[in-house]
Length: 148
Image (cartoon, rainbow, N blue to C red; front, top):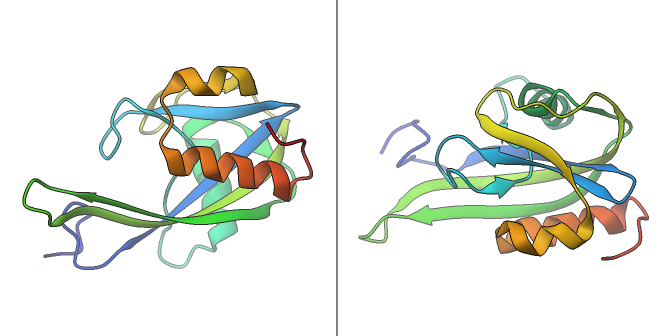
């Protein structure tokens, strides 16, 4: 066990930011493990000395180039991936914030291969992780958007 992200000695704090532009939600395709190649909520690890909100805004900007207005807390998710022997290979406690788009057009950056806006009817075809779907629904509620 170590301070590495893979096979860590403790959970890592992950920060996500669920951005909406009207009814559309911003998603990224992961460029590295865990969940390599899957569509996901933009986010990443919080840095030492960085506030959770600052981490959320930084990760959104680095991964997509998008900016949002005021943030609200959407939900907290535990993401634990185990290896074949059952040992935790990755363990993140993810704090998901949400906000409304103010500027920027999605472009993949940092550790993502694609970024884009998706209408609610497109989400079922993306194969989103169950917890990501739950977080998006919680974000809609937190921002007063209609449920989908």
